[in-house]
Image 1 (cartoon, rainbow, N blue to C red):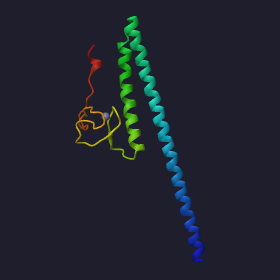
Image 2: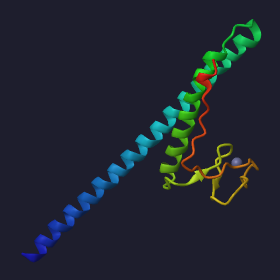
Image 3: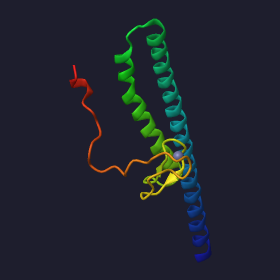
Image 4: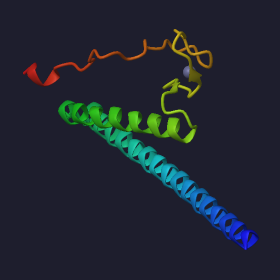
Length: 135
Ligand SMILES: [Zn+2]
């Protein structure tokens, strides 16, 4: 019954492929959901910064520390959004302009989409400043 075995084998391969395809679709939906959440969080964070800035400029309350504390969150979310975009577009190592989203190659000093100067590809060096110690 070679034909029957081949038929069964073919069917289970088809089922495997369907399951894998469904898994991929599920992953894509999860990624898009994560991206959606990260963008919403980033908007919320910008809004908080905006309210604090308004409060400071309009009512002269000192909100500098609170604003400063939100900045790492903005950086983290922007990083997360960039990484999710890269994964969704299928290239985890691709670099995109932080201003307009145009894909960049390492030798580009300026974004061809918007003209924004591009930082050199990150090496091991850290760009963190030690603001906390400046008290
Ligand atoms: Zn750009």
